[in-house]
Image 1 (tube, one colour):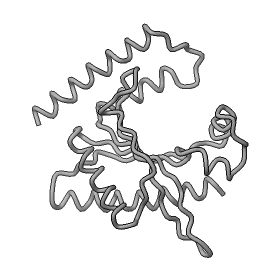
Image 2 (cartoon, helix red, strand yellow):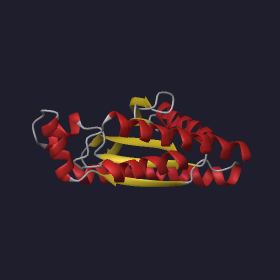
Image 3 (tube, rainbow, N blue to C red):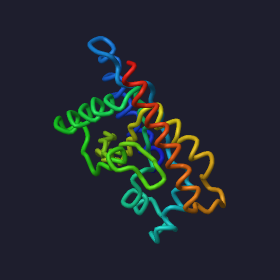
Image 4 (cartoon, helix red, strand yellow):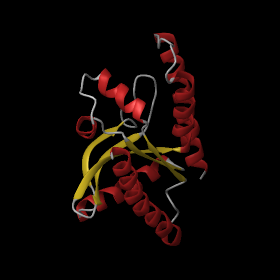
Length: 189
């Protein structure tokens, strides 16, 4: 059931983002390059619950894991991230979603250089007999930030690589070079 609810919640928020994107095409430069959805696989959910010391069951997963359902919104420029965030804030004011937490890794990047804005929200899923508020993690980043994050993920994810100081420094240096490229492309635009 958890993956079904996650899928429904993603469909709800994706529809809102799609309408916003199409509307922005008609009135302004569209701040969205593309959108990607993800539902965490059962094995990943189980592993995360076990690693954090929580019981492995649906109730525990819903209460303790914020990223079972994920939506990544990739924007051309960093200034576009603010426009998307403002739209999400508008949805919250209207009661369409509820903000749970905002993690601004753009203002304060992770030590390895990772940058992205994470907005964790609750999305209402209207079922026949009830409305369930399902958590969705929305990551908003630029094309350049996404490029770095995708490659870092391919290099390190679920591998037995020990992230030592040298590797962390090299990744951070790459992130800084990409941030310069990001700014230069914005300036050219």
